[in-house]
Every structure is written in C-alpha cells, then in structure tokens.
Image (cartoon, rainbow, N blue to C red; front, side, top):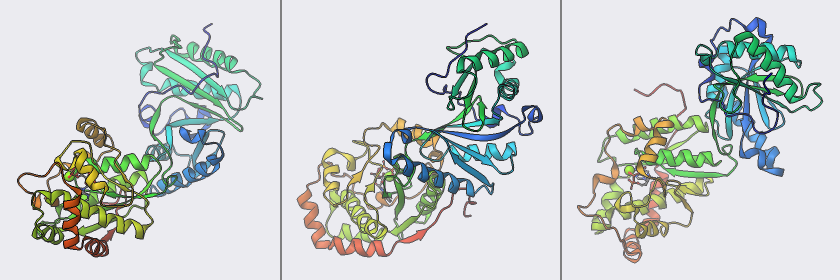
Length: 433
Ligand code: ATP
Ligand code: MG
C-alpha cells in the first residue's frame, strides 16, 4: 500500500489547465458523485493581513460578486477559514465553470479551483475522486497520481493519512494508476471543511495580489501604447482602484487613439469593474507649448503638462497617485534626468511599476492580460505630433519652469482637466463600431 500525501503543507499546485477542460459540461458521472460543483478560492497575501483580514475578505467578496454579476448567474459566496466558496444557485456545471473563469481575473486570489462539494464522509469523497480521475486527460496515458488531503475540521473521524490511503487505494483499484507523491500527473486534492468535503484536481491560476480598493485610488495616464495598460494592471493587482486619463492629439489627429484607449480600458475593466476613462483633446495645448519656444524640450514639456492635468483631475476624483508606463531608458523622455524633471512637475507621487522591466517582459505580460493586440493597432499618437527632430535627454528643470510660467501651465492644466470627457467602458460589452 502506498503512503499517500498527508495534510501537511500547502494545497498542491495544480496544473494550469482550465477546469472546464478536464470536466465535460454535462458531467455524466454527476449522479454518481452526489455532490455539487462549486468554485473554491485560495487567497494569498490576504491571509497574512492579521487584523485587517476581515476588511480584506469583505472587500474581496464584494469584488467577486460584482465581477460575476455581469454573467447573469446567481451565486452564493461564503467565507471559510482561509478559502472562499462560490456556489451557483443553478448548480449547473457550465455555470460554475463560467463563474470560475470570470473569478480568475479578480485580484487577490491565487488559485481558482473547480471542485466537487460532497457530503462529509469518505464514501462520497471516494466517489468524487474517482469521477475526477476518470475524466482526467492523464488517465489515457496511465499517468501517475497522488492524493493530498487536508483537514480544516480536525474533528473529522479519519486522519489525513487515513483519507489518503483510503482514497488512493480506491483510485488505484479502479484505474490501476501508479502513485507518485513527488511529481504526480494527477493530483487529487481533498479538503475536509466545516460542513462538507471539497475534492478537486486542476485549477486556474489567479492573479494574486490584493483586492482592488484596498490600497486607495489612483489615476493612470493611459496612452494607446503597450506599456501603460500593463502599468495599470500592476497597480490594480496591488489593490489600487484606478481611473484612466488619455490625451488625444485632436483636433490635429483623428480619433483612433481614443478608440484604442477605450478598448484597452474595456479589457482592463475585467480586473476591477466600474472603470472610468477621461479623454482630453491635447492638440491645441501641444501647439501652445511649441509656440512658447519649447524646441528640444517639446516632449518633456508635454509630458509635464499631462502630469499637471492628471494631478488636477486626480484631485477631483479623490486619486492619491498618478501612474505611468515609464520604463528606465526606454525612450528619450525616460532617462533618469528626464524622469526627475517629470517628478518635479507635480506634488502627487508618480508610480511607475514598469520602471525596471524590459520591453520583452512588458510585452509578455501585455499578451497574457490580453491588451497587446489592442495596443498594436495603428493610431496617431499625440506625442509624435509635434516631436522635435532631436529630443532633449537631459532636460533642465529651470528651463521647463520658465517656459511653463510663460504658458501659465497651471491654468492650462485646469482647463484641460475641465475639458475631459468621461466614458465608462465595461468589460464584455460589444465593441463600438
Ligand atoms: P506607452 O507604451 O504606455 O505609450 P511609451 O513607451 O510609448 O509608453 P511614452 O510615449 O514616453 O512611452 O509615454 C510614457 C508614459 O506617459 C506612458 O506609459 C503613459 O503613462 C504616459 N503617456 C504617454 N502618452 C500619453 C497619452 N497620449 N495619454 C496619456 N498618457 C500618456
Ligand atoms: Mg507611448
């Protein structure tokens, strides 16, 4: 008899296969399982937050409910010790899978498991385990397996190793698979909870991080480019709720960059919900900067005016930070000297989550969060509109300040912030034609 995994340690990292792939929509074995499909959520850092934990959990639960709302599936969300259980009223497998996929975008969750929720006895547990192994893709190639039980309710009459032995023996008898505790192809996780037992194999990797809203509010300066959407994602993942501000070159460019910014925010909305995009026509202000003799400082002066406008708008929205997609040295406005000159333009902190990332890393993340294809669509970026042939890489703050005095940049920023048009892109809504 093999000794199977004990309750010690973490839930095993399941393979990164969506749960809907290993469980057919109409589960033929559902009657045999005598259980209910549900979604089990593993929280990461949230568990560590001591006395703030209640607040965290409540915030996360609200965010989960809000995310699922758009699916039109009624769910019940219950907090257990260290995990959250989401049940669909319909009990339909297809509904539960849709809920699992949607929740995988909610910040603050490390693993999303599509689990069987069965009665609290070993017979039901065995049946659920056999059902899951029976539909596992690794079964056909006679892969190895391991059972990893864990008891959150220590009063359960069997110890973890007893459960492992019992379930492992049943699986082995039924399918004749070898056990491999170190590197199994199939991991059957069993969690004995207060009222029930959860049994699952694969899961979806969640986003990790903290629930959106835990860290306050910020304003993302959102171009149509690759970097700023990734920067927004990174800050949402650290619990910041974000608003978005986009500057178009209008009236001297077409509206394409606005469509892109809209489409990007609509995609990113899956991570927080209720997103707002503010669009400012920036072309005339760019021309004013040029007329005030900016020359090689044109780009950096534009960026400072964007930041000032962002600061004004953030004050109106209750935002406590600005966020940009700057990455050190990537373009001329992102040299250390120029970044210092940008910081000088505003009082608010400027968060730059991509500052130390390579372009290839940023692009990989953009692909994963599905903003890359949108960012790569052609548009007319306002920044290139009046770009000088050679941009200054070592801008002097004093020169910039003097120029801004001539321009009355503070007043201009107020006007620009006031001219902002608000949009509310919603994840999953059809694209505007
Ligand atoms: P991105 O890919 O995000 O456009 P980038 O590498 O092209 O970045 P820049 O064009 O210098 O770099 O812009 C740096 C940052 O300034 C952007 O990440 C964004 O936060 C902000 N920014 C630039 N252009 C705009 C714009 N038109 N509207 C709003 N923010 C902008
Ligand atoms: Mg750009």
